[in-house]
Amino acid sequence: MSSDYRLSTLAVRAGQVRTHEGEHCEPIFTTSSYVFRSAAEAAARFAETEPGNIYSRFTNPTVRCFEERLAALEGGAACVATSSGMAAILGTCMALLQAGDHVVCSDSVFGSTIALLNRYLVKFGLGVTYVRPDDPEAWRRAIRRETRLFLLETPSNPLCGVADIQAIAAIAHERDILLAVDNCFCTPALQKPLELGADLVIHSATKYLDGQGRCVGGAVVGSQQAVGRDVFGFLRTAGPTMSPFNAWVFLKGLETLELRMRAHSQTALELAKWLEAQPAVQRVYYAGLESHPQHALARRQQRAFGGILAFDVDKGREGAWAFIDAVRLMSITANLGDAKTTITHPATTTHSRISAEERARAGIGEGLLRISVGLEDVRDLQDDLERGLAAVARV
Image (cartoon, rainbow, N blue to C red; front, side, top):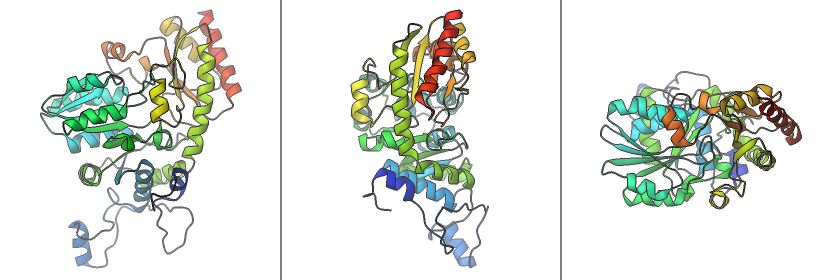
């Protein structure tokens, strides 16, 4: 489908190829393998001299529709769908790096990303240096001769820090280093990292791309060479790929992506402003607030500020847990990007597998709470937050 169409149209239409049945909704191709019309055709497919389906681990029409649609939304030449967001990060590293290479990574990324790098990939000879995401010169200083990849998440999880994608991309490209940006919090509805100079975009499709907490999946978007050839080659061999059913669910999620992200952002901004005025709240982390240190940058590189906000409450872990236990509407779960608002304590959930020193460096304290703002009425959510604040006061 032509990229001349606008995002909301691409989110509904891109990637679909109707079968002879004339279906309006994309079909789910639940088959493990495909029948060839001749031995010659089978040989040509396996030799990759002729396009077509071979085996659903790496070629499936429903998955391909999702890949082409997400690539269109991000403005990338190729997309590879994976079994989870972490599989997308693993596939990127395994395909594009080798023993002796070095990665510069933001110190404010999802805890499992740090665990993957520090506990597993370093065993295969990969070097990693962590830097502040909001200091471009720190990225420059961390470069070594063997640096091959910058890994960035913006806005960051859970403190909503915003990094200058354009500036970091320029530094990376001075030394032929690839920049991969985790765009999970914003999605292409709010931010286009490839347009800002990134080489790769990584997604946990589990989050906003689905939008209703139904399925687990991930994706990598980028050039035909890096993604369509290299990342696809690893996924084809290793197999952490997306199932046809999950791809079909994510296709339905993409259709409402822009509408949902606009609604999430509007409610989150209203709640962030309200929380900032509460005496039991020490600090609110949300780029839509003028008090946020990267507010101006976020206004430049994002269309809106997203549905994730975090805040510190009084009395540390005791206060934070009392707050969580007092809510009645919000779901106590570590997932995010759902139509239902969720709340979690990052220090003991999403970032519990990293060390106390790593949490401290990332600014994740014991009194920090993270909320993924859903689609409920903002007044009902505010009432629930008041229950939590009242519980903190009683501690």
